[in-house]
Length: 408
Image (cartoon, rainbow, N blue to C red; front, side, top):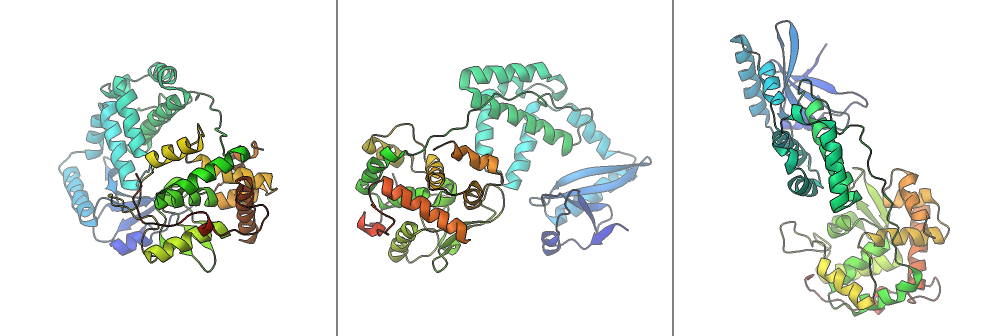
């Protein structure tokens, strides 16, 4: 028997995915209306009816953006068209077969925006810069040779990494057309094309750079900039997670920071241990702000601070350090932990990695176990910086004062 229920916001939200297959649930109120739940949890409305003896599944839209009432009204309209002798599914297939790449890209963007894809801004930029040559072409006209030449051109002009990002983008857009839009006869011209070989970046703060880095950090007059950099280094968290850190995620008693799955790359909660030095920074900020809302509040649309590019450049210039990115601070903590003898499995757990292959990038550089690992890494950093001579804790308040200001 088909699974049925009355569609409400609460009932749709409660629908759990089934591993390895799509789950289909019909609406009890509107005939033919169903929702598919993917193994990843995304939900999509469809109108499912027989037309000329063949079952047609007509996509209505993402349940995250299409209301239940709109889905019901749309499904009723589709059924009326079928009763009048029209096959809406066939009409859509004909129309999609004539789509230009720009049309398909627009549909893909809508889908990604509804799902909250974080890198969508970069994808749209790559489309504007590198994909205008195929934008107006019909999908049926875009051949494998076009994409191979495009990949080669971007790789030569903008670099191998950018070339790979563009190839991956084209592949994703065509896959969306095949799987989500069911465009007849559509194949993926980017499928199987080889990516450029990329060398994993292994830049870190080296031990001989640590004293200069900490001296420059101590001289930084902007406390928000100083604390943001310090917590990025001491937690090993992604910079976006540090910027969007909230006091509700911090447990001062347990000395942990829980990054919710909605903010994590792997969509699973990550528990980050807070070392002595990290706790000093947070306690000082809590005393100054009252520990409410964002740890790093800002005046922009997000409500929290955005990446301090000018402040970072100022810090590196003061320290006399080149070719160091904010993300390299994450790599720096992991490399110091490895130097201290911490296992890849323990480091990977704290960083939120799902494979030791990812964590092993750091190994080329010369939760009790996790908390101990983070303390060892922090101690090694502070010793290298000349802030500590031994493992004895030195309060961070001795390194700098705290004043409210905005990042520039």
